[in-house]
Length: 163
Image 1 (cartoon, rainbow, N blue to C red):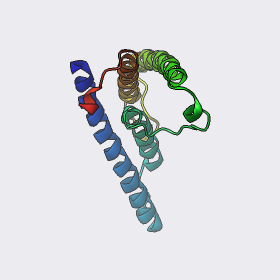
Image 2 (image 1 turned 180 degrees about the horizontal axis):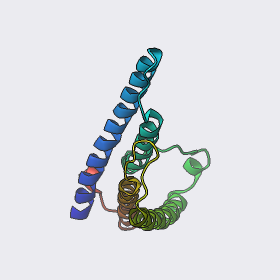
Image 3 (image 1 turned 60 degrees about the horizontal axis):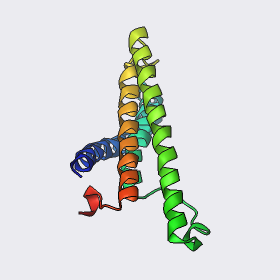
């Protein structure tokens, strides 16, 4: 499935950006605390941390889905017959796909409105639309990953990561 491998490439980039965001959060927080001790806190530290946290969350979701790093309660699920589990998986993936496509689309429309209005962050005056476009793209990659997993479930094929 060539499209799956293409999406995996973007997921690796998103995962890398998510990791850099975590490092940025840690670095700015440590620097803010250290300089704040001497009476010179970092200007816009809270703003940077909140922006990087949004990137960390949104850009980490597709990779977490691929790695099955999400939290699940399998007490009843593991006791169900295989056909019922497959049906539940197909239902879950279908609903998740629709949900994240809609959220991605709405984020895209919101980013366009932010761009048109010229909205910037309060302290550092960073353009807000760039972050929202990034989140929209990350959620689109999550939705496409879910769609490929749904197709794999229905067809019974192997995905790119299992080949």
